Length: 138
Image: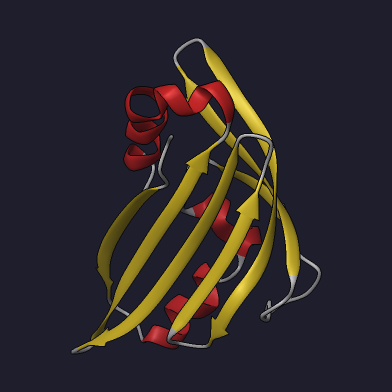
């Protein structure tokens, strides 16, 4: 049986944690910094715990593009500290967890993605899905 895959990426950003939080907790802006994010529709800004939103994710391979609508629920919203969503699509279940840590005069931004691939695609996750997701993450 397939297990969930977890990837964590970190980057220092030269602004305060609240500014990073305010930007990355806006899924309608994800397309500006995440190549798979095509669009998102939000019920309001800022999103709070319990809010739901939709995002279209597009993953491009050399000869095919895979596009899926993903439905999310915000599960944690602690301004300037932590933000988390859980999402579902026909191909994936996922959790995206963001931490915003003051690091001197910068913010250590940590993004942890945990996902589970449904169906037969799960058999190819290590060779098809994981490398693509990793290359599109910070």
